[in-house]
Each structure stands twice: as structure tokens, then as C-alpha cells.
Length: 125
Image (cartoon, rainbow, N blue to C red):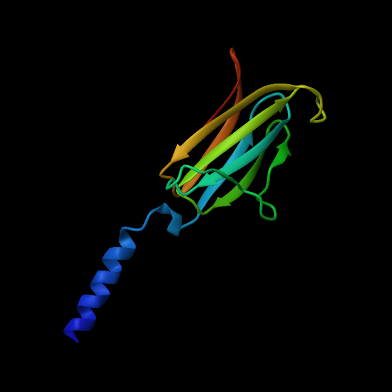
């Protein structure tokens, strides 16, 4: 019985020290700008600094219109959100800006928002 109790304690301690990958992070990507933008979400385990495009089912790169948002579920320890802002109102035309932001040690709920600023367009968490 004592051995079993010790084993259970060891498993609980080990589980408590797992990285954020163990749980899901809810990510909301918002476009608060005046232009349509193509958003790509990348994830990484942080181990080899390799980014992977999140592209499974509804969680995939997509256009997001002004004043709209899209939710994602992330199972990783790092996330990068990239926005390619388009000139045309119908998500067409030339690319005005290519911007991104990175968040490490993620968990819980995050929001990445594209904004119009005096310097153009910026994306940040």
C-alpha cells in the first residue's frame, strides 16, 4: 500500500510539471482593422523552434473580414499569428502589410488582434 501511495504521488508530481502542451489553449483571432486580411496560425512545441501551420478542419488559414473574429483550439506551447492585409474590400488586391506576433508559454485563453495604427497595421496579443 505504501509503494502504491508513493507511485501515485510520483505520477501526480510528474503530471503537474508537464508543459502547456498537455491542455488546450483557446485562441481568438480578431480583425479590428478596416481591411480584410488572410490569417495563418502557426504552432510550435518550442523544442526545435520549428513552426507548423495549423490546418485541420475549421482550424486553418483563412480570410477574416473587418470587425470579425475566428476561434481556434491550440495544443502547443507556442503560437504565432500572421496577418496579410489586403487592399481590396473583397479580400482581393495587393498586399498592404505582412505582420505577425508570437506568444510563448501559452495556456488558457488568448486574443490576437489586428489594428489600424498611425504606422499602418499591427498585430499583437
